[in-house]
Length: 288
Image (spheres, rainbow, N blue to C red):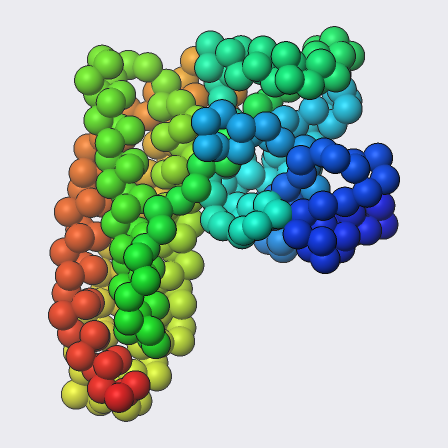
Protein backbone atom coordinates (compact mmCIF):
# COMPACT_ATOMS: atom_id res chain seq x y z
CA UNK A 1 0.00 0.00 0.00
CA UNK A 2 1.27 3.48 -0.85
CA UNK A 3 2.10 5.81 2.03
CA UNK A 4 -0.41 8.30 0.54
CA UNK A 5 -3.27 5.78 0.76
CA UNK A 6 -2.22 4.76 4.26
CA UNK A 7 -2.30 8.39 5.41
CA UNK A 8 -5.77 8.85 3.92
CA UNK A 9 -7.02 5.68 5.64
CA UNK A 10 -5.66 6.76 9.01
CA UNK A 11 -7.16 10.23 8.68
CA UNK A 12 -10.49 8.74 7.55
CA UNK A 13 -10.69 6.46 10.58
CA UNK A 14 -9.61 9.17 12.99
CA UNK A 15 -12.18 11.71 11.75
CA UNK A 16 -15.36 9.74 11.06
CA UNK A 17 -14.75 9.58 7.34
CA UNK A 18 -13.63 13.16 6.78
CA UNK A 19 -10.26 13.87 5.16
CA UNK A 20 -8.44 16.93 3.94
CA UNK A 21 -6.00 17.63 1.13
CA UNK A 22 -7.12 16.73 -2.40
CA UNK A 23 -10.13 14.79 -1.02
CA UNK A 24 -11.47 17.58 1.21
CA UNK A 25 -15.24 17.68 0.92
CA UNK A 26 -15.36 14.46 -1.10
CA UNK A 27 -17.45 11.51 -0.04
CA UNK A 28 -15.15 8.55 0.51
CA UNK A 29 -15.43 5.02 1.76
CA UNK A 30 -12.84 2.42 2.68
CA UNK A 31 -13.09 -0.86 0.79
CA UNK A 32 -11.33 -3.92 2.20
CA UNK A 33 -10.92 -6.83 -0.20
CA UNK A 34 -9.15 -10.16 0.20
CA UNK A 35 -6.07 -10.59 -1.98
CA UNK A 36 -6.81 -12.93 -4.87
CA UNK A 37 -3.37 -14.51 -4.52
CA UNK A 38 -2.17 -13.59 -1.04
CA UNK A 39 -5.43 -14.13 0.84
CA UNK A 40 -4.54 -11.07 2.92
CA UNK A 41 -6.85 -8.07 3.52
CA UNK A 42 -6.21 -4.97 1.41
CA UNK A 43 -7.87 -1.63 2.17
CA UNK A 44 -8.21 1.27 -0.29
CA UNK A 45 -9.94 4.66 -0.01
CA UNK A 46 -12.40 5.23 -2.86
CA UNK A 47 -14.81 7.91 -3.91
CA UNK A 48 -18.35 6.63 -4.27
CA UNK A 49 -21.82 7.50 -5.43
CA UNK A 50 -25.16 5.97 -4.51
CA UNK A 51 -27.74 4.05 -6.47
CA UNK A 52 -30.62 4.37 -4.05
CA UNK A 53 -29.09 3.20 -0.80
CA UNK A 54 -26.36 1.10 -2.44
CA UNK A 55 -22.83 2.54 -2.76
CA UNK A 56 -21.24 2.40 -6.21
CA UNK A 57 -17.47 2.44 -6.73
CA UNK A 58 -15.76 2.81 -10.10
CA UNK A 59 -12.66 0.82 -11.06
CA UNK A 60 -11.25 3.68 -13.12
CA UNK A 61 -7.57 3.50 -12.12
CA UNK A 62 -7.44 7.07 -13.55
CA UNK A 63 -7.98 5.67 -17.04
CA UNK A 64 -5.16 3.11 -16.98
CA UNK A 65 -5.36 0.13 -19.32
CA UNK A 66 -5.48 -2.39 -16.47
CA UNK A 67 -8.12 -2.85 -13.80
CA UNK A 68 -6.98 -1.86 -10.30
CA UNK A 69 -5.88 -4.66 -7.97
CA UNK A 70 -8.89 -4.23 -5.72
CA UNK A 71 -11.19 -5.06 -8.64
CA UNK A 72 -9.34 -8.30 -9.42
CA UNK A 73 -9.56 -9.15 -5.71
CA UNK A 74 -13.33 -8.77 -5.50
CA UNK A 75 -13.87 -10.89 -8.61
CA UNK A 76 -12.00 -13.70 -6.85
CA UNK A 77 -13.42 -13.02 -3.37
CA UNK A 78 -16.70 -11.05 -3.58
CA UNK A 79 -17.26 -10.67 0.16
CA UNK A 80 -15.85 -7.28 1.21
CA UNK A 81 -15.86 -4.88 4.15
CA UNK A 82 -17.12 -1.34 3.69
CA UNK A 83 -16.41 1.59 6.00
CA UNK A 84 -18.21 4.89 5.68
CA UNK A 85 -18.04 7.82 8.03
CA UNK A 86 -20.59 6.34 10.40
CA UNK A 87 -20.59 2.57 10.05
CA UNK A 88 -18.78 -0.55 8.96
CA UNK A 89 -20.52 -3.47 7.31
CA UNK A 90 -20.11 -6.52 5.13
CA UNK A 91 -21.13 -6.46 1.47
CA UNK A 92 -21.08 -8.54 -1.69
CA UNK A 93 -19.32 -6.63 -4.48
CA UNK A 94 -21.27 -7.00 -7.75
CA UNK A 95 -19.95 -5.41 -10.96
CA UNK A 96 -22.73 -4.20 -13.24
CA UNK A 97 -22.90 -5.64 -16.74
CA UNK A 98 -24.59 -4.94 -20.06
CA UNK A 99 -27.23 -2.23 -20.18
CA UNK A 100 -27.19 -1.93 -16.40
CA UNK A 101 -23.51 -0.96 -16.49
CA UNK A 102 -24.14 1.59 -19.25
CA UNK A 103 -26.98 3.18 -17.29
CA UNK A 104 -25.01 3.37 -14.06
CA UNK A 105 -21.88 4.69 -15.75
CA UNK A 106 -23.92 7.44 -17.40
CA UNK A 107 -25.25 8.40 -13.95
CA UNK A 108 -21.70 8.40 -12.59
CA UNK A 109 -20.44 10.66 -15.37
CA UNK A 110 -23.30 13.12 -14.87
CA UNK A 111 -22.34 13.41 -11.22
CA UNK A 112 -18.55 13.24 -11.73
CA UNK A 113 -17.54 14.11 -15.34
CA UNK A 114 -13.94 13.09 -14.67
CA UNK A 115 -14.92 9.44 -14.96
CA UNK A 116 -15.96 10.07 -18.55
CA UNK A 117 -12.49 11.46 -19.26
CA UNK A 118 -10.94 8.35 -17.72
CA UNK A 119 -13.03 6.13 -20.00
CA UNK A 120 -11.83 8.09 -23.05
CA UNK A 121 -8.22 7.28 -22.13
CA UNK A 122 -8.59 3.51 -22.25
CA UNK A 123 -10.07 0.82 -24.46
CA UNK A 124 -11.14 -1.27 -21.45
CA UNK A 125 -14.69 -0.92 -20.17
CA UNK A 126 -14.36 0.71 -16.75
CA UNK A 127 -16.35 -1.37 -14.23
CA UNK A 128 -19.02 0.05 -11.95
CA UNK A 129 -19.39 -2.04 -8.80
CA UNK A 130 -22.37 -2.12 -6.46
CA UNK A 131 -21.57 -2.88 -2.82
CA UNK A 132 -24.67 -4.81 -1.77
CA UNK A 133 -25.01 -5.11 1.98
CA UNK A 134 -25.33 -8.74 3.05
CA UNK A 135 -28.11 -10.18 5.15
CA UNK A 136 -27.85 -8.98 8.73
CA UNK A 137 -28.79 -11.51 11.37
CA UNK A 138 -30.84 -9.89 14.16
CA UNK A 139 -29.17 -9.68 17.53
CA UNK A 140 -29.82 -12.82 19.53
CA UNK A 141 -28.11 -14.81 22.19
CA UNK A 142 -24.41 -14.41 22.75
CA UNK A 143 -21.55 -16.84 23.15
CA UNK A 144 -20.60 -19.69 20.84
CA UNK A 145 -24.22 -20.80 20.49
CA UNK A 146 -25.21 -17.35 19.31
CA UNK A 147 -22.30 -17.23 16.89
CA UNK A 148 -23.30 -20.59 15.42
CA UNK A 149 -26.88 -19.40 14.91
CA UNK A 150 -25.64 -16.16 13.38
CA UNK A 151 -23.42 -17.90 10.82
CA UNK A 152 -26.14 -20.42 10.00
CA UNK A 153 -28.64 -17.60 9.54
CA UNK A 154 -26.25 -15.80 7.18
CA UNK A 155 -25.69 -18.97 5.13
CA UNK A 156 -29.41 -19.68 4.89
CA UNK A 157 -30.14 -16.12 3.75
CA UNK A 158 -27.39 -16.04 1.14
CA UNK A 159 -28.35 -19.43 -0.25
CA UNK A 160 -31.98 -18.31 -0.45
CA UNK A 161 -30.86 -15.27 -2.44
CA UNK A 162 -28.80 -17.45 -4.79
CA UNK A 163 -31.82 -19.73 -5.29
CA UNK A 164 -33.96 -16.70 -6.09
CA UNK A 165 -31.46 -15.40 -8.66
CA UNK A 166 -31.10 -18.86 -10.21
CA UNK A 167 -34.89 -19.19 -10.35
CA UNK A 168 -35.16 -15.85 -12.15
CA UNK A 169 -32.70 -17.16 -14.73
CA UNK A 170 -34.77 -20.33 -15.28
CA UNK A 171 -37.96 -18.27 -15.70
CA UNK A 172 -36.15 -16.19 -18.34
CA UNK A 173 -35.42 -19.32 -20.35
CA UNK A 174 -32.30 -20.70 -18.67
CA UNK A 175 -30.05 -20.24 -21.68
CA UNK A 176 -28.71 -16.84 -20.67
CA UNK A 177 -25.32 -16.45 -18.97
CA UNK A 178 -25.38 -16.76 -15.21
CA UNK A 179 -24.39 -13.13 -14.83
CA UNK A 180 -22.19 -11.35 -12.34
CA UNK A 181 -24.97 -10.80 -9.80
CA UNK A 182 -25.53 -14.53 -9.40
CA UNK A 183 -21.83 -15.37 -9.66
CA UNK A 184 -20.73 -12.96 -6.94
CA UNK A 185 -23.41 -13.94 -4.43
CA UNK A 186 -22.80 -17.63 -5.06
CA UNK A 187 -19.05 -17.26 -4.55
CA UNK A 188 -19.59 -15.27 -1.35
CA UNK A 189 -21.83 -18.04 -0.03
CA UNK A 190 -19.40 -20.81 -1.06
CA UNK A 191 -16.32 -19.15 0.43
CA UNK A 192 -18.08 -18.45 3.74
CA UNK A 193 -19.48 -21.99 3.92
CA UNK A 194 -16.04 -23.47 3.25
CA UNK A 195 -14.41 -21.35 5.98
CA UNK A 196 -17.18 -22.17 8.47
CA UNK A 197 -16.92 -25.93 7.99
CA UNK A 198 -13.13 -25.86 8.04
CA UNK A 199 -13.23 -23.97 11.34
CA UNK A 200 -15.67 -26.48 12.83
CA UNK A 201 -13.62 -29.50 11.71
CA UNK A 202 -10.30 -28.08 12.91
CA UNK A 203 -11.35 -26.31 16.10
CA UNK A 204 -14.85 -26.52 17.53
CA UNK A 205 -15.58 -30.20 16.95
CA UNK A 206 -12.30 -31.63 18.33
CA UNK A 207 -12.75 -29.47 21.43
CA UNK A 208 -16.34 -30.59 21.97
CA UNK A 209 -15.42 -34.23 21.39
CA UNK A 210 -12.86 -34.01 24.19
CA UNK A 211 -15.55 -32.66 26.51
CA UNK A 212 -18.22 -35.13 25.31
CA UNK A 213 -16.64 -38.41 24.10
CA UNK A 214 -20.10 -39.96 23.73
CA UNK A 215 -20.71 -37.58 20.78
CA UNK A 216 -17.83 -39.03 18.76
CA UNK A 217 -20.13 -40.79 16.29
CA UNK A 218 -22.13 -37.60 15.77
CA UNK A 219 -18.99 -35.66 14.86
CA UNK A 220 -17.91 -38.40 12.45
CA UNK A 221 -21.30 -38.24 10.76
CA UNK A 222 -21.21 -34.43 10.57
CA UNK A 223 -17.70 -34.57 9.12
CA UNK A 224 -18.96 -36.90 6.38
CA UNK A 225 -21.77 -34.43 5.67
CA UNK A 226 -19.19 -31.66 5.37
CA UNK A 227 -17.40 -33.72 2.72
CA UNK A 228 -20.62 -34.17 0.72
CA UNK A 229 -21.42 -30.46 0.93
CA UNK A 230 -17.86 -29.59 -0.09
CA UNK A 231 -18.31 -31.63 -3.28
CA UNK A 232 -21.58 -29.85 -4.03
CA UNK A 233 -19.89 -26.52 -3.38
CA UNK A 234 -17.09 -27.42 -5.79
CA UNK A 235 -19.67 -28.31 -8.45
CA UNK A 236 -21.37 -24.95 -7.97
CA UNK A 237 -18.11 -23.06 -8.45
CA UNK A 238 -17.26 -25.14 -11.53
CA UNK A 239 -20.69 -24.34 -12.98
CA UNK A 240 -20.05 -20.63 -12.43
CA UNK A 241 -16.91 -20.86 -14.55
CA UNK A 242 -18.43 -23.03 -17.28
CA UNK A 243 -17.73 -21.81 -20.85
CA UNK A 244 -20.38 -19.45 -22.12
CA UNK A 245 -20.61 -16.55 -24.50
CA UNK A 246 -17.39 -14.96 -23.29
CA UNK A 247 -18.98 -11.79 -21.93
CA UNK A 248 -16.71 -11.17 -18.97
CA UNK A 249 -16.09 -13.12 -15.79
CA UNK A 250 -18.80 -15.47 -14.65
CA UNK A 251 -20.61 -15.39 -18.00
CA UNK A 252 -20.71 -19.15 -18.42
CA UNK A 253 -23.88 -20.91 -19.44
CA UNK A 254 -23.72 -23.00 -16.25
CA UNK A 255 -25.76 -25.95 -17.51
CA UNK A 256 -27.60 -27.59 -14.63
CA UNK A 257 -26.71 -24.80 -12.24
CA UNK A 258 -30.23 -24.44 -10.79
CA UNK A 259 -30.40 -28.19 -10.10
CA UNK A 260 -27.09 -27.97 -8.23
CA UNK A 261 -28.38 -25.04 -6.17
CA UNK A 262 -31.52 -26.98 -5.25
CA UNK A 263 -29.51 -30.02 -4.16
CA UNK A 264 -27.17 -27.83 -2.11
CA UNK A 265 -30.18 -26.23 -0.46
CA UNK A 266 -31.69 -29.59 0.53
CA UNK A 267 -28.41 -30.99 1.85
CA UNK A 268 -27.37 -27.86 3.71
CA UNK A 269 -30.75 -27.21 5.35
CA UNK A 270 -30.87 -30.77 6.70
CA UNK A 271 -27.27 -30.50 7.86
CA UNK A 272 -27.76 -27.18 9.65
CA UNK A 273 -30.93 -28.41 11.34
CA UNK A 274 -29.16 -31.53 12.65
CA UNK A 275 -26.17 -29.51 13.86
CA UNK A 276 -28.35 -27.05 15.74
CA UNK A 277 -30.46 -29.79 17.36
CA UNK A 278 -27.36 -31.57 18.71
CA UNK A 279 -24.92 -28.73 19.33
CA UNK A 280 -26.95 -25.86 20.72
CA UNK A 281 -27.84 -27.61 24.01
CA UNK A 282 -24.20 -28.61 24.48
CA UNK A 283 -22.87 -25.12 23.71
CA UNK A 284 -25.40 -23.45 25.98
CA UNK A 285 -24.53 -25.82 28.83
CA UNK A 286 -20.82 -25.05 28.44
CA UNK A 287 -21.49 -21.32 28.67
CA UNK A 288 -23.96 -21.64 31.48
